[in-house]
Image (tube, rainbow, N blue to C red; front, side, top):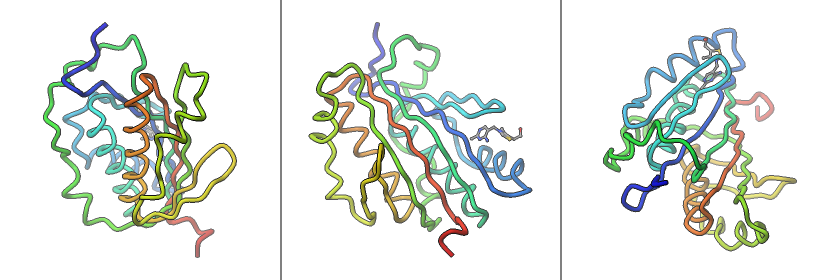
Length: 195
Ligand SMILES: Cc1ncc(C[n+]2csc(CCO)c2C)c(N)n1
């Protein structure tokens, strides 16, 4: 099966927004609406949204949707799973022809938002999966984000742009050596616990 396009392979993210607000329907639908998703395959249902396409656009769209929801000032959380190299899917292959320019970066760049995030990498099908994680991730170089370890996950605190950059860098470097990788994350902004 050929799921390669140049040097880029098809990736995806399945995520759910949880606005802790009476206005949750509007916050979810506006965030999904305001973000330009034209470079990714997208499907939203009552549980979650799934996007598929080039890695650069998967991270661009996921981050932008979280930022647009969080900029309402409400306590908003998002949980999801990134995946690459999952064999079998071909229905989003057409999106692999898109250029690498992320469509939402310019608009999202002006949104400053602090958040806390826990993420975990799962390189699939490897006896030495722990080595694959430790060898490829060098979070010591992550600028603007505080890194701490927790059970089953790594915690990142800081600006949302820096948090997503750290997760993207980790995911990109692990998938260069392990063909099938998943990464779970849970991110929270405007939590009353921090007031
Ligand atoms: C990113 C994301 N996608 C879908 C849902 C599921 N969902 C729950 S309420 C609602 C709006 C009314 O239909 C939707 C779509 C979600 N929470 N977050």
